[in-house]
Image 1 (tube, one colour):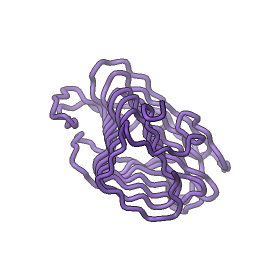
Image 2: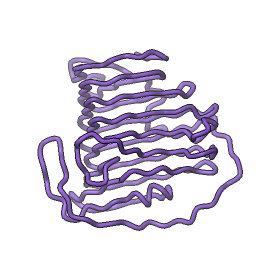
Image 3: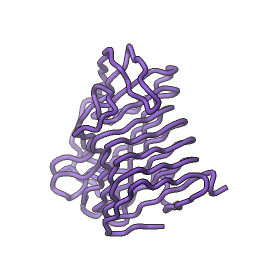
Length: 251
């Protein structure tokens, strides 16, 4: 089922093994396909990847756990650097930022067997006004970003599109091997010239969305959620394609 250019209020909707809401499979995240991505003059960035270690409490859907060495990987995302961390049950977070690309860029950040928190520096599950944004000023470079972890939690705004609405689109993939949760999140594909943007939420187990909104202004752009069990409790879908794909329900 596809929603186009309509505003739909989804409240207390549950999508589990007994109820399937199939999405646009041909655009599912793992293809990472880029369309309509014009190039301009490349603006150079110097690569770096500094991290900040702090002590904090991490909120999970099932309770609080201590994270004595949680690290902020904001810098690595800003510079669009790939990451491959191999630590068991460590916590990482990405605090608010805005980044861009002069030309097409691709990166993958893999936090194997660990927790990744998007959009909050203190790793709190309380909804906030943070923003993780791809696209700035008039830079039209297209970004493909993939984030992988055992558990992923997202809050605040996550989106793409430059300020001039001429480009800066993105394909963003958040993929967990266990649980993916969003609480008070807002996923937005702003108009980006002729570019098509997608945000994909994938889990090998469950996807839990609470008070989470989706908005798309790009041609043929949209959102996918894929997991063995999908729960959506409260939120609005405004424009674009929107697909749920329950793996177990589809056999």
